[in-house]
Length: 463
Ligand SMILES: [Zn+2]
Image (cartoon, rainbow, N blue to C red; front, side):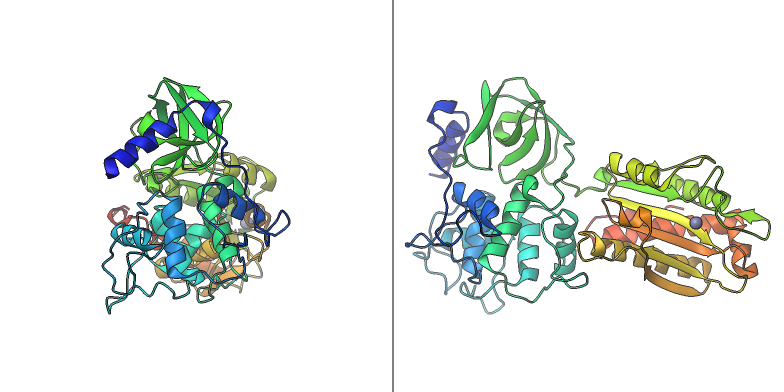
């Protein structure tokens, strides 16, 4: 039965253009074309991922139940939704969501309660939503906090304030639709950027590219056998791909190539580009004191961090690797065009000879989708640096610096110590201590990725 269903689905995936576009764009009476979530709701409705009530309303302000969440996510990633008996006494086989609940539980996207029930009518919180989406889309998050940062770093969700994701607030149908639509279609995201780093090729004689990951979505065009395409990420049996002229979803059965499902969309460390930014350089010496210059200290430290990262699958780009002057705007440009995933700027302070200690900055602003990740990275590096150098701990701070504010990725700025302070200078001028600082930054980066759900344990032995 299931095989037949799949065969029909596959046949539909390569049908010619003429039979398509049977699904006109839907609009709900209470959503229309002006509701703030209308683009997302209508996108999902076109693929049958969300439906309204019998009066043609979507009920955007209603709280999402666990049964609804399982059904919407299940339809989005193509789970088997055939209504059937479940393992839960409180989910009858006639329930509209019974099939999706059972499939989502089997796929470990959602789980029941320890008393054996599912509680299908319980509301879903924002924290739970983040975890469900992270699991369904393979974002490798293990906690609600890492799931929330996985969504925020992809431009799928924002916190309700700069420092609060609103984990415990119940989520409304309109907001759930927005987050789900953005997970499926990156063009709906706050910062619509993905890397097309999966190389693959069309094996069907003609392959339809669709607006969404199911045959319910209309086509945007067709591509012939042998066309080389680049994939960005996977949604169920579909891949978001692009050619030189087209972008959209293609069925994975008609694409070959050596990609690993799940090993995409930034979930493997080999996909992660680390930007190391040694401050100053060339005509700009930075801070000076007690016979040494900031530009030399931070360049040497940055090169040592790169040497450590080069012993791992991480990719690295330096904004400078020699004693040259680079403007702040150029540093950001280098980072963005290298498609950096994190940005680490390295500096040393100077003040009055008395001030001393290490500190790490990030930029905190409500509109920035990377605040939580920037703060996490700053905290991890600061903790490691204090442990390694044991200078006074000036803490993790909010700093409105160009390279932190203008970067399109989590970004931090480390001030190793005060060059004009005798005690700090002892460390800054020593190549051995600079190696310790480089290791601290490296371990801080590993700590950050570990908390984000990446498997980095084997790299802690690197020195
Ligand atoms: Zn500086």
